[in-house]
Length: 130
Picture (cartoon, rainbow, N blue to C red):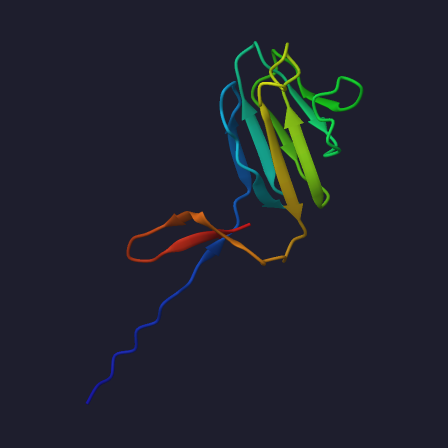
């Protein structure tokens, strides 16, 4: 009697780049990424991208680092440390209107959560570990 052995291979892939369609009137969910991952912002010339501390005052012009001016799209930022990072648009009142996105950056190897929204289903299910 012959036996057939079926082996299932579980593949876990970490997302290396998050693409953001950077515009007004979007409700951006928090993103969980890993140190070394990147975010790429694509936007029209009536927007910009600033990195701010997550200090409750993200729409202030008093702090922040310019990541991409209004003529720089697309711009890419690489997360080189763990922590919480908030990106905002400083054009007019765009930040106040909600053009902000928060990234929670974890250390490599921290697999405490699987992003089930990134799962694709077929013969095999593949989920992104973030």
